[in-house]
Length: 378
Image 1 (cartoon, one colour):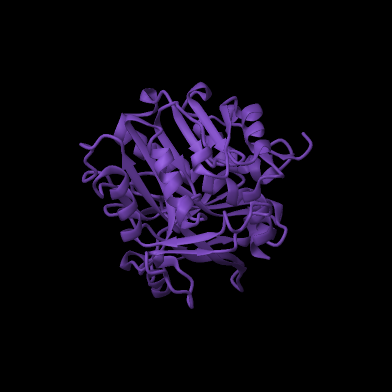
Image 2: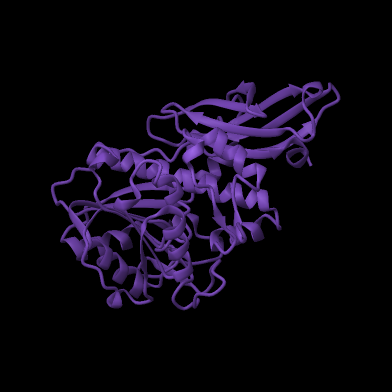
């Protein structure tokens, strides 16, 4: 299909689907080459189509892992969801995973780009809504059991931040949840100063077409978000997971039901990690070195696996200190995160597909490196 990348024409996507998807034959892996998240990743990875595809798919899967835990906690599973809205959902980063567990007839997607909405309707069979620039102009009367908003509020100026939060909250069913992510002040780049109200809006973003006055880059404090929620609901009642989405953005959850108790909720974003280097040693070994951690309250790294052409060849655990990781995440659980793992060079070929992935104690896994041995070791 022209303008679409998929498991049919890209071996890295096929390898991801075969390893990560329970029912690969039913999974729609189609990625639009117009997808701004794909294009941003393509630029970030200096034109590497494979790495851009994996970034899009792994962040989509991690979003799904988060949504699944929250839906299970609040509704007892997707069988009890009759209306789900993925707002500002782009070209289906979440949807391709969501339709594996929830019928498309129960899913609505909304985005400012008409082409993105059309792509999702055609590819995934979901209901589509073309959004508007101003929340006051948005027309919607349907109520939703769950509304998910990934990385929209991390781009909005104060007026639209507040306006969209109120608009979406009003679309919740009586037992509904609104899930959204933000850039917290903890990830504010050096040299920038937070505004007095607890919000800082910068006129820059990864979007290639949206007005930077309406869609830039936003950082907020918890006190700012809490004050907005208090204004909407009468009390600052919410759940917050630091770095809960993509290990960078904070996740907030607001419940329509004022009696909702968040105290027993602890979502796990899964275990982040990175392969710092893959080298050929003098001992005719292929050495993988990197880090893997889990920052959950009660979870930990259970396994690090190296899989080659679908076969598990080696596994290990973190064994040495990485103070840089603990400092970067501002969490002492990142200290003992360094790992080192090797495989005999003689059993691998440059064209072999290699996957390095981390699994935590509740079986949430995350691919931290993927590609041919030649590409990883280069």
